[in-house]
Amino acid sequence: EVQLVESGGGLVQPGRSLRLSCVASGFSLNDYAMYWVRQAPGKGLEWVSGINSNGGTIGYADSVKGRFSISRDNARNSLHLQMNSLRTEDTALYYCASPAWPHQLTPFNYWGQGILVTVAS
Amino acid sequence: SYVLTQPPSLSVAPGETASITCGGSSIGVKSVHWYQQKPGQAPVLVIYNDQTRPSGIPERFSGSNSGNTATLTISSVEGGDEADYYCQVWDGTGDVFVFGTGTTVTVL
Image 1 (tube, helix red, strand yellow):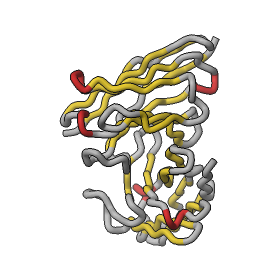
Image 2: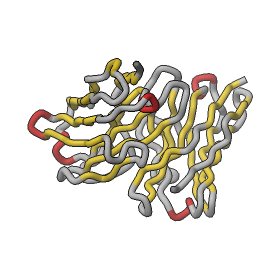
Image 3: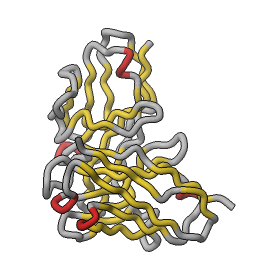
Image 4: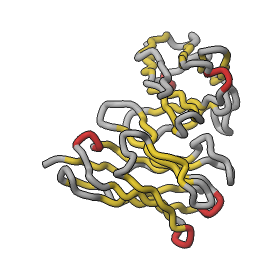
């Protein structure tokens, strides 16, 4: 069974940093594109960033460009999101997601349960 | 930036048909995916590449895409279909994924 489990969230002050992780089980991340999607409280889904199977960055949402950085560690079957210069508007539930087929960019078949990031003073 | 517009809400009686639209400029040339999200849960893919159902998704869910509008149709709506629904496309111009604004479906 495929599982994605996020970690690393919590309460952080504006301007500080946080690093999210997503560990996969039931499949090897090596050949899969991976993504971060967030959802602010009571709001809709917002794509944050993606990374393809060879480690190349697919892109970043304009709202996080220059502040967030996506990476993957295939040896540890994990995905990461380094979030710097956090703002109150970054407060959200962060999901990692992936397609079901190797070397495909879409759709997002698998989702974690999400990890909450709260940016507040 | 590319924008996908959905009606904020839709109410439908059990057994009836719900049609959720997703409007975007020339969306018909893009591949559209649809996700269902129930309260407190992660999204679930219900339609991909405009009209294909993943395994385990009931045949009551179908999709179409043409011109400036993509549509998710839920036939014979059941109480368990109450959820938020989001469309999604890849915007190659901006190299970003875009989600629609979301539609809350209420079963009366």
